Length: 438
Image 1 (cartoon, rainbow, N blue to C red):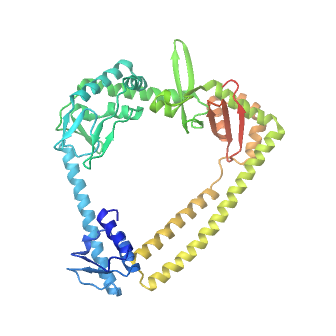
Image 2 (image 1 turned 90 degrees about the vertical axis):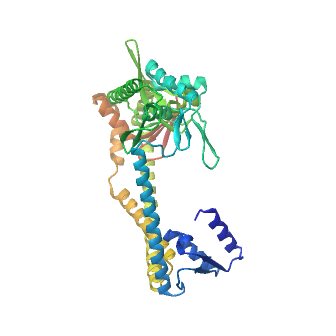
């Protein structure tokens, strides 16, 4: 449907300048059954005749429409068969180490369908690997690359459009350091094969880089699992609209914990006005706010009332939506039955069936949401808030984290404004307080 020539034809039909469309074979117009049905519906609306020179059928009769649909089914089958063969050929070429298109790796140019080393970029690639083995940190390497103002690969598509040339991020740098292309190999479906192109990084350097990357990832995972970060997966940077990750560093014998904005981690700390916040301080601040809510009877009652009100509102919305969907399903089923009796066009039947399926899926989602038990009910939240002080002193670090996650849905950190906003579980009610120490 997106082909330029087909779009021009439809524009001419809409303008009333076409009375009859003639094709050599049906599949010259489209090999997609759904697309062809839509095109035929357009023809019917504009009273445009359709003629296939080598295939005789009459679309005004039920037998003619059946013949047309059979022909289209075979055309679509042929198209899918061609796609499968193309994928198989590309897979075979990959296994032989050939370049099969896509974004060229930094350090190579594509010449006559082959990867040819770009010497100036190749020197930078080798320098990046050396920097990583020296600095032992992707983030530190990223800082150096940003200072040098290096950009990602610039390349031109077959249509003449220019791509790339953007700033390196942590993800693009990680991908570069993991890319087996640089040691003369290709990857296909998690398998490594020898490539036709020339390597630009020493295999020993590449192997040492992989060991360091794996070691850093394992060490990072271990630190996160031992840290007991109370606000893990809860805290978000409001300035950038993204999450914040718990991190830890050691200086001498002392260990420092903090939360860092994911945007800053990916694109450099200068991209966020408040990229980090001390983990102990903001955790202490959040705990104090929960403690104040628990100790203030009126404040606690207000939070509980808002949670209860929000839940009732959600239930009413779900009930209204369920009733509306059931009414629409009944009407759509009636239309589908009527369309089948009158032998309507395939497009109409397909659209009705799609509409019914979408509404059934939504009903199932609503049923799961209303029937599944909530993580914690309102009475339990009230009890936990009331007994928060007593419970907190007796809990282990892991249990404290679990309690915070039961009570709080999100912690919104706005470093520029000096605000921390707590969104309690199952509600949109917020407790916004000026951040005094965090």
